[in-house]
Length: 298
Image 1 (cartoon, one colour):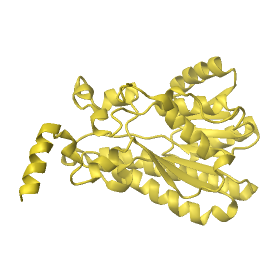
Image 2: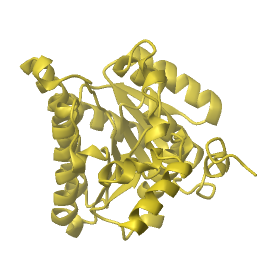
Image 3: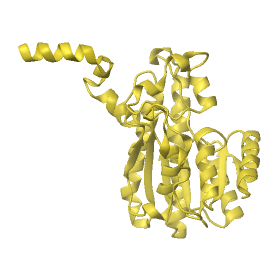
């Protein structure tokens, strides 16, 4: 019998969409130089998209672009852009239009986080996360929305949030507030800009380990001690290709009637934490026998 904690057929299946499913579409991925942004961008390229990747670190972007081009044989445009600054966002958009003729999709992926008791954070630390996640997503959405409406282009915004955007979470309060704001923006713009043919959706990923981010958040051996897969009913973390498959579907024409939706991809993690009695999975079978006897006698 296959061990469910090690088997992952859906991830091993590879890409989900058919060849050239994104051909002709130009996609901007913020925070596209590393981690999940890099994984999603690579799959977009494999499906025929034109790709623009942005972050503040041009050297990282250039290295990532070279790796992507070597893997896919498709040109990638790296642009340094601080999404907190609207003028830089406008400049980034203009460079993308000049390179590819138009832009069709915005993936708001740039993020930052601190894992800390909230009282230990400075006001500046709190603002740093709000500015990158919420203000940055708003800046990019506003710039692209104005462009699409003016040019009568049916655009597409995909925001990466988290499950605690709608549940809240201790120890990541700045991120929780910022991601909650992005989720509210997702639903609001879906209604307001839908008449312009602009779709706005979000993905709420659960644990998808990325080496750099997880080492910063949980340094040393903390990541091993705080094993995320133990909090997931499927008893594993997500594979990057699984997230890339979902993102590609949502930015493709195959999802043309999905608007204002947030799709959770977390193996059931947030539901396990939500139920009052979900932690009872820790009770061994022998103890359940005793509990059943006690219940029947009562």
